[in-house]
Length: 284
Ligand code: PAF
Image (cartoon, rainbow, N blue to C red; front, side, top):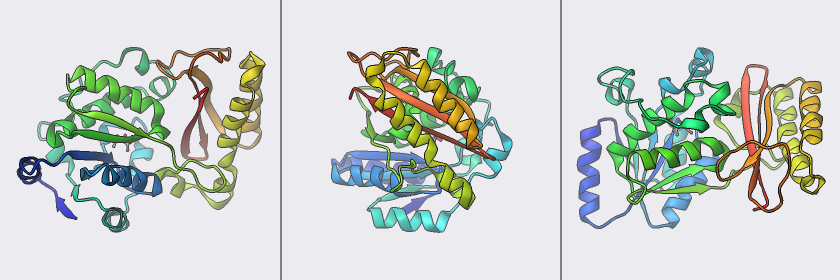
């Protein structure tokens, strides 16, 4: 695997690969990589892409300074994982390289409704930061395929909108890959490493709640199971931010199950200092 820290070096290298008719598959990350990231790289490798991964902990998408400062940084382990997974190029820029004119420029995308609900409502400014950095990365890498995890369901929708706003939906295909889970069901996340042992044991309650929401699809009303989940989470020591049911296509929130359309159940809750999110598709 070749590592680039400078944009022009990466771009020179990639334009040579494009001349060899290679398709570029891109996996943007913030590092602290786990098997979920490995599965994204593997998917790109299996698709015969020339695989570029980026690691950049983007300051502009964190509203919580502590969350940013405590974000795990594990470069050696990340490089090992990517090499083993078959990644061809790692792009490892610093803040100056990514934002030479400062972090204030280039975040003028509008995600409308998506920016006002769930993650958008609880992390104001987060998706502006995501849009800013993903747009910058897409302009640099110009991938044919972009691989992202369903674990960040709303982020995937935001990025889909971003591709449209950048007018590159026909050039860059967004591939959303399934959430990888630990054997007990906990969704893999870089933030899991910040959980204490007792918190780690409790963290599966989020997944258990999602499964119970999924299991009550024939009940009609969502509000009863929603309240049950909120109560369970609080009893176990979580600070739930939301337990929600939404149309999987546009994230329109609903109080009622509808078996005729794809739905998604989503939960965000804090356990101590660590904020966890997860989701489960319902009806396909
Ligand atoms: O999901 C992430 O790791 C980040 O939000 C992303 C997409 C790499 C942008 O910084």
